[in-house]
Length: 360
Image (tube, rainbow, N blue to C red; front, side, top):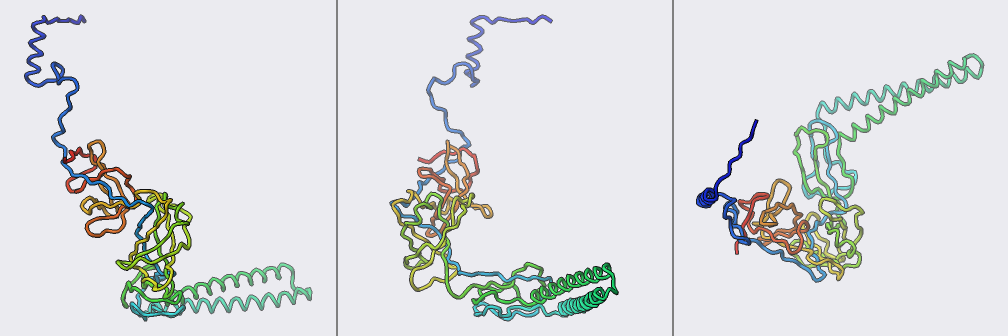
């Protein structure tokens, strides 16, 4: 096959380029070199905010006040809860009965388990007596070595069955009556009497009556300065009070890049467990821009995740953040942002990766 080539005269080339320019086709007579492209028509106009930072050797972090001992009493059996002996606010002693499963079906199950234990106890006693008799006959050379070994094996088997039956009985007795693990206060009831519950269902929350700790997640960059830092805490909107470091957990949470520190209040009054608190760290070794605040309208919430849209290369990029306390229309940002980054003031109408135009 022979390919045919055609050559246009000069006047034809000029005519075609002129027509292309007239209808806006690229390739002939484009924009002058150095002229900036116009903004995209589909770009979303946004207003950005700068990060408010707290520096100068001071860091304020959200914290939680926790009782020294906290326990959730759960059901260990599937059945009907018949009795709850305490209510919220009641003080309890270690070992005190808190709840009972005393329905007829529970009593029958307990009676059957107790009969199995009694039968296993009788079988064990008989096997022990039988081995003693066989040992005596073997000593008199009346019984053989094989008979003696069979009696010993029967005794061991009976003892194992008795121990298993005793364990089953003790477990069921403990499961049918929930007791307090320590001296404390009942802070919550999860169910009411008469409810059918499954194993693992929460029944009551109990907190120790004395001693509290302050749990605070400390950013990874501030951990080296924690030992020598001056520490104080604020419970709710109360005054700032001194605190001391009791221990620092050895593992850093890789998702939040924080490590939990345990603090103890210095001096009375003791704060109430469960209250929200803030902890202030003061040290010249702390990194700058430790605490940043964003307006509440910037925050994106999707289930348990929280984030904001950071402006990068004229595009909105969704960044997941760890947030702290929200107050007066602003939210503390614990981690996830860097100093100098700009964030969309209003997250409404934005999506990850959409082009944006910053309002001047």
